[in-house]
Length: 137
Image (cartoon, rainbow, N blue to C red; front, side, top):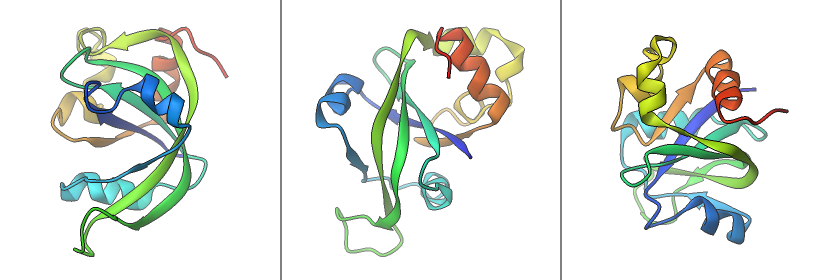
């Protein structure tokens, strides 16, 4: 299993809205590195749901329910979408400032590549963030 982080501005699409919708296509990504990460996602992979700009915190975990396919928001074949479903709330949101203060996370995509909308998370980072968020499996 691989682990990821997907970002959304809560005023555009929040974790609460995602939970109401029960599933969403992650489309509109127009960055090649983020697109490559979408391409590598497999059904069952988990992704942190991060509120960007406002809140700046990881609030939940999503699960990949459909692997990459042509992004329906464009005719350009270079761009992909992936479908996610909500998996689990973090009991306590994990703020970006918390992660920046801990040298353990210095190599995490969220810290190093702050503008990347779809990033990788390694297994150790994933479980440490779950611990910070008081969320277990």
